[in-house]
Image (cartoon, rainbow, N blue to C red):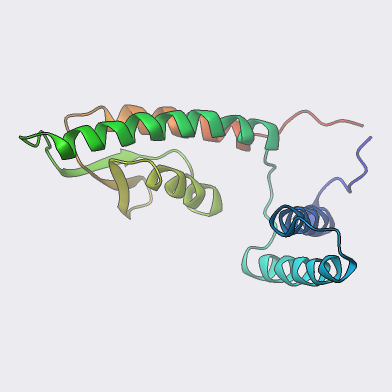
Length: 168
């Protein structure tokens, strides 16, 4: 049985407050009472702002699967960054910049916005526009399998957004 409420705004409030306070602890790295009080106030303010700016949505994020994306993202960023550096220092640039339309499966909203953010952090492509069905990416080299790479990223990201088994 979970110690947190099953869903809705109460769960979102508690999860966000705990995450903001945990972030405060990591950044502050002290156990001084005054700092903890400031951290609680900052966490409460951040929680309130996040609930106003991004109200809880239906659905569920599988945090464990989302965290498993981190090594994948770091590896691909390293590979892509090395490729960009190699091309930048080459005597003759082997680039074919241009735009690629990616047929996205995620609906417009926070999940799609987060996917665009993840994709924008990977060197070599950046989202530059969108329609209901596609995201337009500006790419350093359109000869690369950009659409296939984005599809693999979206599949991995979407798995972390699928509802997990209910416990209780």
